[in-house]
Length: 157
Image 1 (tube, helix red, strand yellow):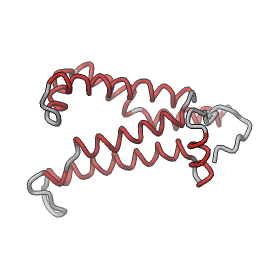
Image 2 (cartoon, one colour):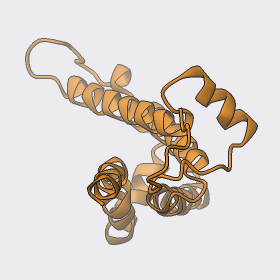
Image 3 (cartoon, one colour):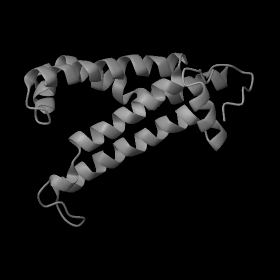
């Protein structure tokens, strides 16, 4: 029982940025979220679509990871989501005065960029497992579950 609780807790920690926090932020601060998206795509309709798509990815993929239903694919999608948000909204290289020493807004964005990239790595470990055989297993059966709450070893790799 303790092992099941530990796995559930680890999965909660992995997705908690998205569900509930980021998803809830998109609801509570909808106009600000649309304005942030509009900074990347000037058409309001596309910005609104991005917010709804992001909300859907955050909620549905997080629930898939928590439940273990197609959790490998969900983790792969969230990894892509983390990388794309890092590249689109954490552009530290465009921030004036980005430097390693002293006060720098660019450096703060750089750390946010790296956190997104690191989180993507965690999701890829969930999607692929910890060895090359897991990558092949994912490619062969991307909708497969890792069966996270099973007490029988399944060779999740």
